[in-house]
Structure formats: C-alpha cells, structure tokens
Amino acid sequence: MLKKSEEIRQFILAQVAQNPSGLTNLIVQKFGISRQAAARYLQEMTHYGELIAEGATKDRIYKPGLLRKIERNYVLNGSLEESEIWSKDFMALCGGLKENITRICEYGFTEMVNNAIDHSNGKNLILTMQRNTQTILMTIVDDGVGIFRKIKEDYHLSDERQAILELSKGKLTSDPEKHSGQGIFFTSRAFEEFYIHSHDFGFGRQPGEEKHRILDGMPIQAGTAVHMQIHLDSEKKLKDVFDDYANPKDDNYSFDKTVVPVRLIQYEGESLLSRSQAKRLLSRVENFRTVLLDFEGIQSVGPAFADEIFRVYKIGHPQVELLPINASEEILKTIQHAKSNVLEGAFQQVANVERLIEKGLVEPVSGIDGAVLPEGALAGISYRIAKRDLASVLEILPHLSEADQKKIKNVYEIG
Image (cartoon, rainbow, N blue to C red; front, side, top):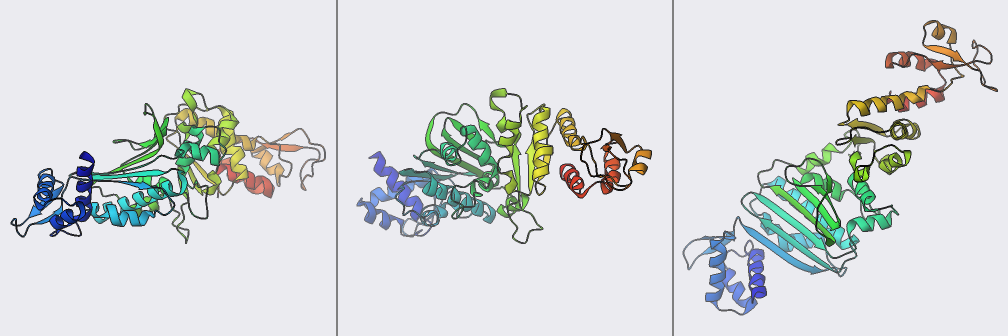
C-alpha cells in the first residue's frame, strides 16, 4: 500500500507542470482509484507544500509547489539516455527557478547520469531530486563496481586514494572518443555542495567548505553515490565556472587549467619527501597548460620532492606552468632552492666570460675533459654562476648556450 501511495505521489509530481487542470482524471485513469481518493492525494500534497492549488473546487488547477521530491528507479540496460530522463522525469521540478540554477542542475544531472550509464558496470540506477524553499538537491546512485575502484583498475593505479587524486585533476576518462573527462571536474565546482561516495571513500565538498578533500567517517556505500546541492538564490553561472579553467587566448576556449590538492598525495600523515611521491602528484598534468599546486594543509616538503617537481619536471615539460598556491614560507624556500639547483651545473659555453668574471657574476671551476669552449674562454676551464638572484641570472643568461638558456628559463618560468 505504501509503495503504491509513493508511486501515485511521484506520478503527480511528474505530471503537474504539463497537466495543471486535468490531474484528477489522469490519476483515476492511471491507477484505477476513485475521484475522491485522487482528490485526497492532491489535498495532502497541497497541505505539505508539494503542490499549489488555485481556483474554486470545480475549476481548480494545480502547480508545482516549493517542497517537492522526485525519485525514480531505472534499469541500466544499455538503452537509457540521460537527456531524455532529464526532460521527461526531472526537468519540471526546476520550474520557476532562475535560469542559472536550471542550467547548473541540468548540466550536473546529465553529466553524472551519463557517467553511471557508460562507466558504472551496474544493473540499477536510483535518481532523486528534491527541492525546498532554499535549496535543490540531487542524488545519483548506482550499484556498479564503484568509481574509485574502476579508475584504479582502468589506469593501473596503486590504490583508490591515487584514483581520487587523478579524478580531482580532471580530463580523466577511459574512453576519450566518447568522453572528455571534464564532467565531474566542472560539476563539482558548479554546485555549492558536491561529493562522491563509493565503498570506503568519500571525496568532495560539504556545506561551508570551499576545497575538495577526502571525507572521513563515511559509511560503506556499495557502487557509487553522487550528491549535489545548490541554493535557489545562488548567483553562480555555469559559464563562469568554465571560464575559470579555460585559456581565453585559445580559440577553442579549451579546459586548460587545473588545481591539484597536494594533500591528497599525503597518506595518513606521511611526510612529502620522495621523488616517487612527486611523480605520482604530477601524473597527467602535462594535459594542462597551467597547474595550480595547492599546498593548503601541508607545512613542509623535502628537497627531493620539490626538486622533482620544480626542476626535473619543468626541464622536461616547458609548456606546463606550475604555480604553488597556499604554500608556507618554509615550502616556498624549499621550492626556490630546488629551482636554484638548475644553476649548480658547470657551464662550458660562456661568451664574454672575462667581463662576467670581472662583475662577479660567474667564476671558473675545474676543467671538464673534452669540453668545447667558446672563443675567449680559458682553455680547460668551465664556469659556474656565482650570483643567483633573478637580476643577475637575467644578465648572465644571454651569454650561455642556447640549451642552457632554455633549461634555466623553463625552471624559472622566464619568458
């Protein structure tokens, strides 16, 4: 009986926007109940704010109320289309909302449902959308393998925490012909609350939080559940979210910037010391032009960790701009020291070397066998940079070989 009552209520919520004056007849025809019973459902839902009734009894029409909830179950049989589900079953619940909220809801809903259809390997899908006087909340739940486990398997990662780190960067997809890997990245930033819950892990942002994090103390959730919420008076616009991570100089306005939370690589309070940790952090960031490395919550990092990121990686990937944000003074000093390591080499090809020595900008060091020295250099001698402030480095740069110039410019982000 309770199951049928909920079915009738859900039917009314789905039909009210399209049939404001013929609801009673529709209920009678669909469920074979009396007009009096149908009227009781409408009266009860009006009382609880799910419907708004206007007009006298004979000519009464109904409109969607401010307090509504739609829940639907679907079988993942290969024939579902997220856009059809949205337009047929859920779009009406956005009636009367501001355009920016409706667009965000449609984008997030269709992206997350599409992920469940294409990637979950599940059999069932439960979709819930509820609206009150202040917020709209959507939940997408499937009974599949679980998003973090699937990413771990598809990308041959060490564990699910590494999968969460990769997911947080964006552009993560196992099927690039069908998916850009952008849906979760942008959806998570469009909504005020967003988190994904799968098996032992939760990841996202809860109310009042600005940054994504691994959520502790989550109960076991088989499959994957995605929760999204936004206030009805929010001024957020989907275009602004896209613009924040696009390159305005690119004619295609491509997804060009990402934020990588460094704390996600820090397992159970371990220190960030090794090159292997740095390499895990930097996996796939060459897909972006600008990478913001967010050090919030990290007090210090080791020299090898910083050197791998800010010298070794930069030498090999000059097209990627690596920008530390929310870094402590201690971390910034370690980063600067790592960058200065590129100046530690013994440079053989130095033009106008006598003048640079006189100014104290370079100094001779032990000769290197077989070195080819430029005209004017002292035979058998190589040189190191003596002054390493930025102004001195800029003065020395034009006198170094093209290869050495390029290496130093890459690391110091000098144009």
